[in-house]
Image 1 (cartoon, rainbow, N blue to C red):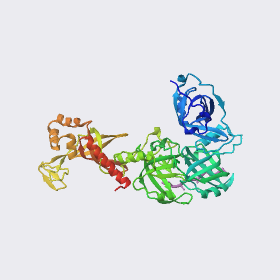
Image 2: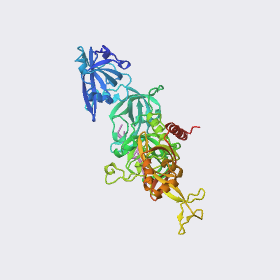
Image 3: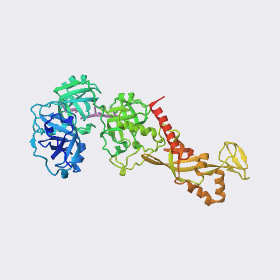
Length: 572
DNA sequence: CCCCCCCC
């Protein structure tokens, strides 16, 4: 097997416009704040250049020894730029065409180029700017070179102007977050730059931004996926850019709700979930005597876990909780209240029904899941012991919740247990009464509801069944009660006949129950949340037991989905 | 150079 290197490609500036094949000569790992980045020295057979920076999401290639010296790879996606008069090519995607063993050594005798340029300019992107700074070696101790990049990025959130006064002086400040296709970064403005830039910037607009200086970001105060921030200087320029094509609107790194309990308190993080419940906005007075408006939302995600998110001020008032929207929250603070909960900050971005795959997945999940899904409310889990962590991560108190739109639902479930004791009761024989009767001393049966004594009674069912519901990504067992018709269908015997067996043939009676164990049916059920003192319990009643006819079940499921979708999207 | 962000 042989492959041709793309001779001459190393010298081409517009390397990102095609997919050259290069041989890997060697790589240099660089460690920065715990992250390893690999710089590659690549050869086109004539020249080699060590300006190729492997995107960290490709580190596994190197670490799995797929990208070893002498292998040949094709660069499928790159972004070129030059910062500080030095060329850098970020490698975002590559395929290894030939392994080192297959090439059998270095191809040709390539001459090493330095990648330095006399002129520089062009457009940079957000992930590369920091990479550049580390590659030029202009770290602490030497003055940074004059920055010459321009980024085209969208403002996702803009802070208000804040003034400060402390031992280090006083001044005013605002910041804004921007995204482009490569990443995100926070941009800071102090004092004169506040006056100059604050009025020009609008959320969601795209700008060309140049001439700022990079500084290391304090991760304690941001959820942005960038180790750096840009501070604007008097030389900085910001111009509106009317071509926003390809510039995304928001970048989030969502933490599943179930994982919030593993995160450090006070972390700033991103969460997405369906707004299951929303309190009304309420006015409160803070400890500092400030009048505040707050509103608590309950978010739920595919894990079935929920978390409380508190919104403040305008965000609390403006939020429309009807129709249970998907809520993406970027940069909320994790607190330890009630186990774990979230609080929005001024810099928090809240997006309702965002046009992102995570939202579609949640939406699909929320309309198809059975309404009786049992949820542990993470926010109600009280920490045990010190430090706010749960003993062995086990929730000590959990409540069950019913999906707020609870109503009839159908699911396929398998019987795993049933109670034969007391599954039959002696019911009033009066028409459609069904009230339990008491035997009198004279052998007759009294119905308190009808106020009548009868010579006989009718056996009727009140059959508790534990059924396991299995859907794509979860399994729950639920105790449900089958009344007359449902129980007769399930057991395949009338209450009268079973009552007769109970009195005459215990073996045959027991067999009826053994026979239904591990059988699978469609259960059309009704669910209610009932409160017993301090405890909530789900009350599930089986309305109808149907054979598992997959075609019919799918139709029913589809009806369910459509019905829920109509509720959710308020379609006609 | 900010870093406050509330209430149960």
